[in-house]
Image 1 (cartoon, rainbow, N blue to C red):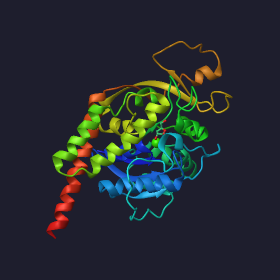
Image 2: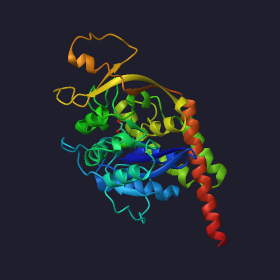
Image 3: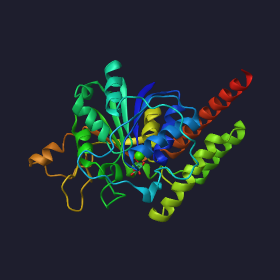
Image 4: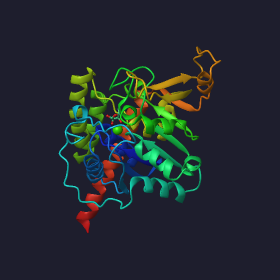
Length: 338
Ligand code: BDR
Ligand code: CA
């Protein structure tokens, strides 16, 4: 069982990460924290609450940072729409937020559990994680693992070299990569393999139809409908990538992806390369070792995701949707019999 805190900025693919985590029995979702990224903090927090409400997920949700560490805020309405998760009709949110700041929820939760048992899963800009490290540095040795969606080693999606989550808050990202805790980087090289193809969409639709309750599956299909159009028009992709859910999938089933040891630095100053993740793979030699920089890059402390088993990924997503759908249908039936 993996105990996780999902730090997110929903976000179409963030929503699927929440659903995947909440619907899988091998994940204990200790809390959801939100961070400004794809859209304003207000909107991404509302979106997280809406996802949980639609799917009947009852976990603490705490608002976090409303702006990046240093860099001025850049939202991505062009990809995720004006509200940050356009497409599905969102319910009026009724649940209460956790009263704490996200940073305090993260720190309290890590300190309240035995050392080495809580995994952090940032799938938006890493601002909350960097702030938590600064506020309570003890979490660095207490956290089990940090598995991030962000970065890439072959291409960017904001600039030719920079991926969005890193580009919008590179200073926080660099702090997270350099801290002395185990980090796995799930970047675009991997997540662009995780497409919500027609096959996956049909499987999700079939789950709702079989259960006689299509609310959750239709919500997901509406998410993929909107982001699918964006990805077709902006990036010429045949189907939308489910970036953020890949992190959760790897925690449920490590065989869902291959990783390689590497050193990762974030470029903070490059005129054209700011926000680039500079990845030096251990088993792909080619660097001259005699400079200080080169020596530092030989500390291959990060695992970098390279190859996805799409079928396993699709099975995990479908399984979670089935479980959440059945749980929600059972909850409705209970309410009717009371
Ligand atoms: C990342 O940026 C956001 O648009 C997505 O939610 C994902 O976390 C992909 O670059
Ligand atoms: Ca995200």
